[in-house]
Image (cartoon, rainbow, N blue to C red; front, side):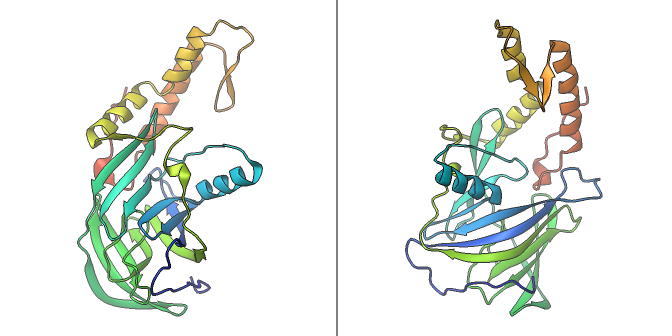
Length: 275
């Protein structure tokens, strides 16, 4: 944080993107002793806000350089799109299909007197309860943007750090840059050519249970209908030779889904049955 240098602009020029990169540490399993890590991007555009893994932008750059159409998607945290100055979020979720889920996520913040200095910035402490977790944020009024990572926004300044009080999810600002024109992030508009299907929370929960009950359904159906003996099927680099093998792998997938059932909004966690 002490080496963090922000490019501050009182007004964003038209057709520019102000990009912030956060270090994101998280636990898929709440009992884990180690946190996984990746970088996340918060793009503040003239008309909207986009939040997504840094790896998406890397893949997009390689596609442009190599003239290819590689798609990738991570499900550790939903990618988000929202209008500027709005609490209305659209989450993008990939399971057995590509979905979009709208939500209103206004937060009630409590501003505290605690402050600390990071580099040239004075940060103030604030707390809120959101998604079934208690959150602690450090924001700076020196940056005149009422934004932050994921769905966190609405403070009188920019969020540099935020984490839950159980240390399951931690965001820390690491970099800032100005892009000369609006970054379009086309990969958030479709996945392998398919637009996201608008759904409700109930449908998402239903789809998650369907995936839990039959996590390898697609490959099982393809295996059963295959008539070409030369065709080979793989799951996690393991060649599939029988349906019984898929059954065992499905059992392991279900165990992993129960073990890693620690979403950032814990009040929306699915209660998976123990088979």
